Image (cartoon, rainbow, N blue to C red):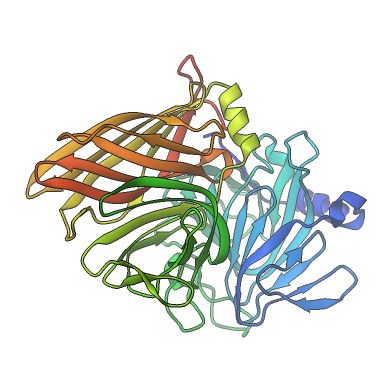
Length: 458
């Protein structure tokens, strides 16, 4: 991944001030939609009108989001996500995206106070100067990555994926995946730190609480992360019992406020789950879990499927757009994926079978093929299977069938997020003793062209 900049000084602030002072008609289009809101957050428009923020409300250029005592998660039209902590103020100074990267896109923002976590979208991917987040201490330019900012009297944060470059009057610092940075003031060189966040002194009441992902909490105080919540249109894959793994494209799903899947349309049959949710994971783009110990029910509460002993493994994600997949195909790119999360493997007849030793995915978007590999540890012995599958003509889901003999792997799945940055897969692996089933979520680790050279996403 190419480096991106993190710069200090008045130039970036002046650029944002000019952009905000001369809005255009294009800027009136919605920039983002509220995906999740708790507490009493508001948005104040350029004319000074204040309105409450609830799920589904749109925000646009000039809006100042104030989380007050709550939290807000925004999904921007370019695929980016911004999660704001309590006591944060975040302004959309100038956002433009018309559905394609043609040089007119831009995303200029100001973090007036507080903290945020973001996964960036398409804006700024080709032109890093088109994306800036400004504070009075630092101006942050970045693209194609995941990072946090905590802004009190200083600026600090962490890089979850990718690389940034932090510069000010004291010098520059490269911050890589998994590292944290700290900027004491505009004239002191940025430095790496073991601390994940800034710890501002407890002086004014408006000083934001320290932000870490584990401190995101629901209205009842339960920990949550950067997650999918509420009604969503998702790609979906699942496996249960004697049924082969099945993909369900563009289906309706509902997640509760902790990110647990509670309702899904299984290809025409809407099923509801109120029982325990195991092995749950949710990163805001893709989510996975395992249902067991209760009945899957219909809307009236009538039992549909008995999961008292068996498990239903599932993975769901925000669909990758057709245009993104078309570009990946036309460029003949190959994507590699590593395991991001999974459910505990179980026997198709019921009961935990063992543990997942590893899983990987390779997607050849040029040839519309995908290779899936799964290895499970059953009773101290590792069994592995690899199967070549095909990507659907629509480019959004994939399937692979290896058969029913020992070592055979069958799977179904989908691509999720901008430029297929995530993938989900439900699988069954035949081993001595029966079928081992599970669900896995993957994150994209690289794209290569036909010559084997690593390339940035289209």
